[in-house]
Image (cartoon, rainbow, N blue to C red; front, side, top):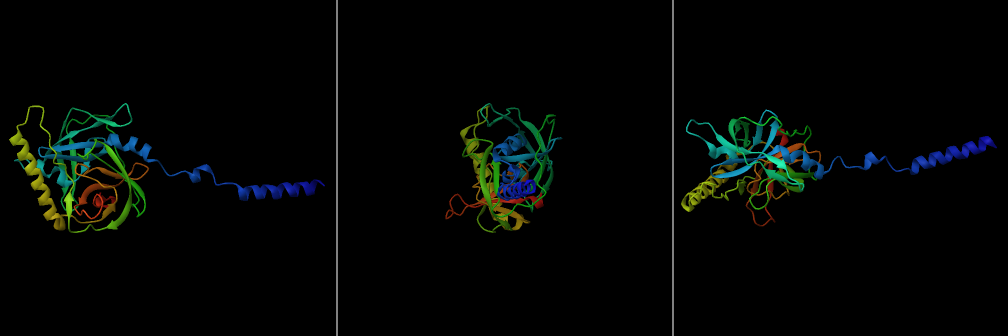
Amino acid sequence: AKSTEDAKLARQDEDDDKAAPPPSDARKPSGSFEDAYKQIAPATVLVKTEDGFGTGVIVDSSGLILTNFHVVARGLQKDFRIKVEVNFGKPSGVGGMDVVEKAHEGWVVKTDRVRDLALIRVKDAPTDLKTASIAKGDPKPGQSIAAIGHAGIGMLWAMKTCHVAAIGEPAKNGILAAKDCSIQPDSEGMSEDDLKERRTRCESAKKEAQLAAAEMHGGLFVQSDCRIAPGDSGGPLIDDRSQIVGLNQSVTTDRSTAGGTSYHVHVAEL
């Protein structure tokens, strides 16, 4: 009788094992974009030249910032070095980010015009900088991703969740460098004429970038439905573990697609 009861219990245990759901960890996503934002936002910065602004991401705690070449190109000085201003951010009390008003001097130490990349070193960088890590794997079509940037059409440090649409070389037509030209008067009281002149120079630079796109942009790109906008350029494209899988670069001017098509420099090029 005992052996029969044991056999029944053994069969019941087998049935329970077959019916049991997978472990909870197997059902969990690899991460959440809510948590990813908390990690990546403090490592994202505002990069400014006199005729506009874009985004950058801190990749080394010594003060190295990765961005697009077209974001910093207009910071060229008479000595042929490129100077920019960098503003860091700090978490706000409501879950977002606030800009740290103190601007830091930054100098471009490396450029890659073909891949539209630049590396900035910040002078007298804070010692407690948050850094972003670069993903070891490649993004895949259909993968959930998010773009972080400072588009002038909205708030700073904004996240756009989206999906990878395709991987490959970018289209050669209709690419507009995503740099923001909505320059505001400075604290010293910029005249309307000066403001108009700076905006005109910025728009001219964007047209130059568009004409040079076919020759300048090479390598692998990520196409997405992130709908990045001017100001997002140079910001990180991340996966749900807050790792960088690309760098925001441009958006098409094709109005036949809602919001245009966004392109990002592929992580393999970084």
